[in-house]
Length: 411
Image (cartoon, rainbow, N blue to C red; front, side):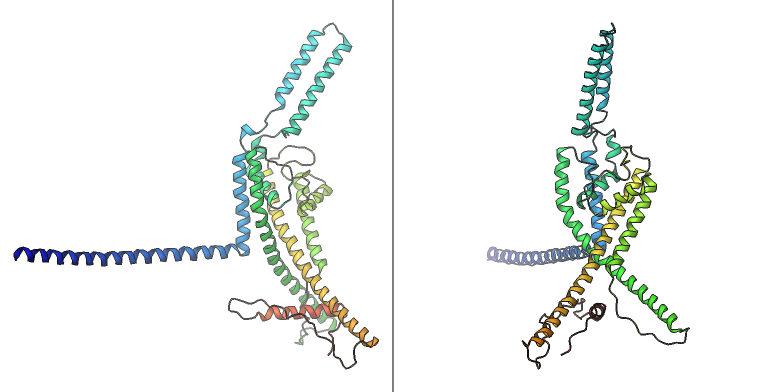
């Protein structure tokens, strides 16, 4: 009986211990799962915030600059090795040519002029062919790898790749460098397109606001001077919201090109024609490459002492210039779309009146309304319609109709 009781007590103790261990394991598993779920939620929230920030204008701009810096470091490590660079390729050719000429002079010391001239001409012709081969095939231009593949130059090379300018002043020579250029362009060109569109919208909004403020202030002061109002407190009726004309965009680009022309002409000692030529071909993404700041372009000169500063300034000049081009594209597109909409309305109105005169429509029939659906208005995060943008669109349409001497059709 004592043995059976002890066995029963052991069994009950084992069952209780197993139950307690199971409960403890379930609690520990629950706490670990809840902590892992919390960490996953925090990681997802951080990733969501990072992606939303990178989609903003500041994020896209920072991403473009970071992408250019990473590419510059990568290309410096790939192409900046001395073993892959044709440094002093002409020195052995020059030395061998001198030795050959001296041997000819010693051998023909009997003053045989005709034979000496023939041998010297052959030697110099061979020297010329070797120099041309080194320059054309190996790309030798008298510069060392430190002078070409420094950080500002590599940064400028990356900008010329993903902006599709392609100067051609710097080219990859190794196989890995060419493969890296292809992959870098495939990732960088879509990123540049996103930057182009975002910066175009940002610059367009800023310039539109500045232009409207200046236009209203100028018209208000002009009307007060014409009316003879000198602080009488009379209120002047506000003009409708003005769209930015294409001429203003063209003047902005001319001013920016003139700034670059003067700056590069003073730095590089170029003529103003050559400097303007470089600014236009760079901003238009033609990228011929015969003139590049920091490389002594145009005259075949060497690298100047402050070439790194010039390359960085050129990098910023082109990056801001691409944004201004995107701004002009956005503003011109808005003006053209509004004028086309007004032209379409005018054509429909004239066709309707011609139909009335020809008897195609009864006189009692009203003017047909525009069959297009109402325009979509931008909504904020709260889901409410932005009233300011709605009023701006209506005022823009009224301004275009007034400028084209059109009137809205009367029913």
